[in-house]
Amino acid sequence: MIGEAELLPQSRLPRPWETRCVPPYRDLAAYNDRAPEYDRGWRGRLHHEIADRTATLAAMTVPSPGRVLDVGCGTGYLLRTLASRYPDAQRLCGIDAAPQMISTASACTRDDRLSFAVGVAEKLGYPDGTFDLIVSTTSFDHWPDQQAGLVECARVLRPGGHLVLVDQFSSWLLPTLATGRRGKARTKGRATNLVLRAGFISPQWHSVYALIINAVTATKPA
Ligand SMILES: C[S@@+](CC[C@H](N)C(=O)[O-])C[C@H]1O[C@@H](n2cnc3c(N)ncnc32)[C@H](O)[C@@H]1O
Image (cartoon, rainbow, N blue to C red; front, side, top):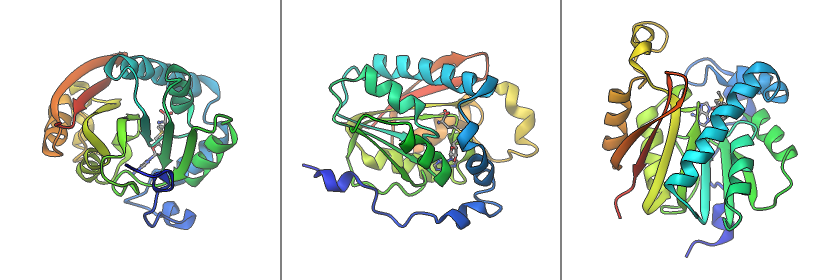
């Protein structure tokens, strides 16, 4: 049985100034700066639409989870949406590498089942087997070590738990792999390989938005 105190991330988390440096955390300074305005304008509406569709997919995949984690939660919109979809969930935790995203998420949230903390996918500060469901939307592409992040997701899921990973996955993105996003899992084939290597089984692909935003769902073996 996992105690409530253990749901607080325990790893050493990056300090604000560490997230301001160039690679491996090159995108984080921009997310810190964008956090207060992140949910506004056309980009905000786009992220909300992707999050709404992700919530629908998550609810079809796991009808009634007890504990949910959103990795790269941004301002927490998806987690708040999941909180209303999952009235029986006990805890909904969000982590994000950008401290300003976490401040914004915390300020927008009234439901005390939700909690937000600075953290990175590659080192999730939770005990093994904590969560029934892990979601992540448009964050994976920014993870400096995508394989390590997925291994961590598998570790903190309980046996039989589910991953819902949404991002840009499309063969249309192949040209970008030769340039700025070299080595990233931006195709379904590459992402499937990483998901399986992390120990998940039964990967299934789902369309989420337009042609390039897709989701892979996968299960931790029971
Ligand atoms: C495009 S935003 C998506 C935020 C939110 N999930 C949404 O759908 O609106 C990407 C987020 O991933 C976070 N991020 C980048 N690298 C990360 C990592 N290694 N671990 C956790 N979060 C990370 C960024 O700080 C940023 O908030």
